[in-house]
Length: 64
Image (cartoon, rainbow, N blue to C red; front, side, top):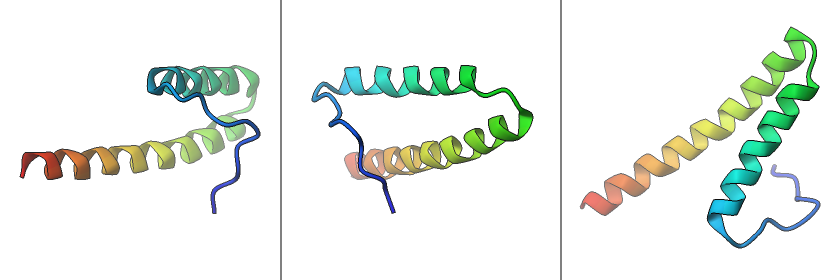
């Protein structure tokens, strides 16, 4: 189940992408232990896997 965002994301896609990147970097800088870094990596990687799958589905659909 997805959590609701505290604030709505900006409408501009490029701004959203940059915001996500900045949040990941800020998170990484705030984590100190290997365990916390690994947990963050696993969860973020799941999100990136979803992004990758959606990209692949869209790419295949556009090639038809």
